[in-house]
Image (tube, rainbow over the protein chains, first blue to last red):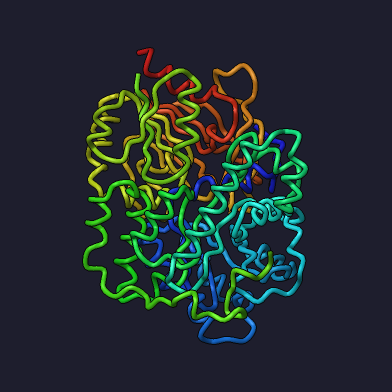
Length: 296
Length: 194
């Protein structure tokens, strides 16, 4: 049959995120790492110039990866490839879409260029954005984001901020389901979020898009913790390729994300993984080092 | 009837919701013991390489081949179709090989080429609105495979996207992402008949 075809609809954009659920998306900086990630069972890779821990160490302005690097990674694997644009940098996003990336992460890990985020509805490629709370998540969804992730504190190997963001989001959703219908506008005002989306969350008791955990996940137990807190899947940034044995750790985090409710399996997959990445205590970060406070 | 949904990775909760809506009991399946306790199986959308690697690592390949081969009603969608198939063009990923087809992965292109479209399905009285996400199509079908729906590519060639072989029903698209339960009904009816 000759179908009348619609591309880039909300359902198609959000649908790819649905397919990634229960899976692990891994940061990679070259084709070799991308293959290790795919072999370990990653559901997607994030193509980057540097992992967040190295962005921290390197300093300066962090930008979209070199298109040659993104293409090298796209050619190396059959799983979806994501890539990061700077917050507000819609031309980086246009370039990434033209390269054929499957998701653009409008990311606080890179240096923002605008107080405004990208108008994501103008694109066929779907976007994922970070959020620390429900208001931030609904603002990004209002702009067209098809997937949300916690911000956490990237490149620290410290999961405390991701936990904080997930708990806050869950608590606010629970609260919203108890708010009287006549108080919805006040709730929207308090959350600084679009009324329609606030009403939708109040009725369904969930975000309208998939919500992953990101920022500081370094061990299989970290991944399972975030899954038990109710997220839909896991991003691991520096945690894999900054560890002693990336292939083994990657496989273990994938398995922990599937069997997240089974402590015996978690114990089994966590054995003998070698050195985890060295972490950073969040309290030692200065205000300008906190990536989560970018793009609110 | 208890309908198991393979819950290693992917959108298994959407399938479970659909099964419950049809009045059947739904159960997550991750282990051989859980597989043994269900009467029918759904393999969901997700990443076929991830599902294949987890199934291999956790000893699910042989039990799945045995149950599906013995005639358990089975529905596979997208990654589920790929996992059921005998082969995938240009890939050596783990597959069950219980469905006599060869698939081409990401056949329509990358995510920007994902689409929704109305599909004529053999045996349904009106078109089915189907969601294709980085979808495969079927390149080759064996003699026992019945093609229930096809889609035409840019060059005008027809490619099967919904097939049946015995009690296996497999779709390149995602009936679990819509409210239309006719594909799930078709799959569950395979258990009632023959």
